[in-house]
Length: 413
Image (cartoon, rainbow, N blue to C red; front, side, top):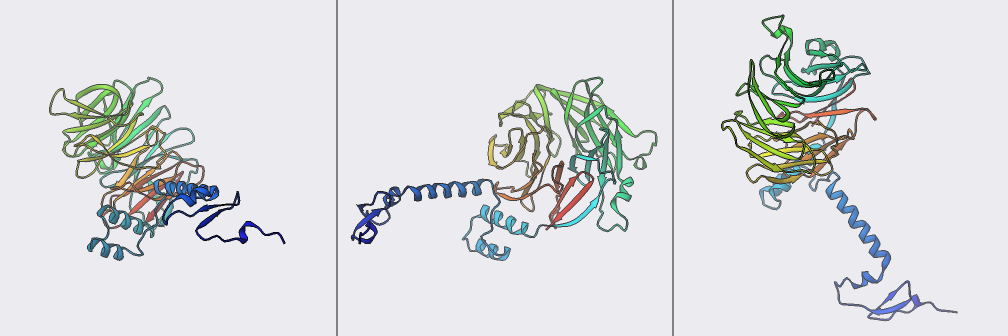
């Protein structure tokens, strides 16, 4: 009977299965035996790439079984602070569930959601009809209503726009309880329009339903500041600043302003422009304008965190990061974002350490706000339809609103 190579065992030597040759076994811990086996090397390489993709893009699995176990480990110093915050956020999201689902603002299934933005007291939405008409509605507390939210929508309707106005951005106004500032561009004139509007029942003068702001060019974004009572409009080559009744001044610099945000006191304005720079404007001084290059493409969204030393910036080219304003550099990258549309607002909750954004693929993603680790991905509730999300800034519980067509889904944990 013919005997094969596998029938021989030579102490201190290694059998290479492809060639049938023996090699001396190196010292323990040496990587050389793996180099002799090509199939094992390929498997290890594929496994490494899979682990790397999961580490960078996919949500994490918590190491601890409960928040209490994580807290105990943090108290004895066996887990770092940023890892502790990430683990708590991951464990909290395990209880994320669909708490409410309702039709809003109407039973018209042809509506498409365009914007969903939160203010200090209310959440505001913009829907576009099949004929390109624009509807603005605010959200109320629909959890305790006896009637369907669609039947109560007339109480929260703010305004309707004709199809010739294409809305570019909106934000909360502060002159009335349900007040909204929107900016857009007119197809006929080629110029922009900015209007502060509110519900008639909250106005002393029933004939005055809105207030128009001066705009002499196309306009792409807006922001309001309750402390100073001013509004900023992002236009071509600068920012227009208004108060409730008049145009105050213009801050000029090169670039199309696509995102704008006030500091709490209203003295500093941050602007994202089309060539990827973050512009810092000091309104107390005439000239100083500081510029920081952050992205190769346009910056479309900017928002300050509560301590005002850090800012979240989003832009084209799947760009989403946290910026240290003192050092003028990026500190955290939120990987996995798919952002290729002009305006796509994000939201965050610092109490629960979470950042939320719905990308151009209509997938809602949640990250750890301080560490940038992906936590969870939520597919669109209606496949193939536009979806917008907003993470409410609530300290007691985490509420995530998803809007698609004429449906609203509320997730809580």
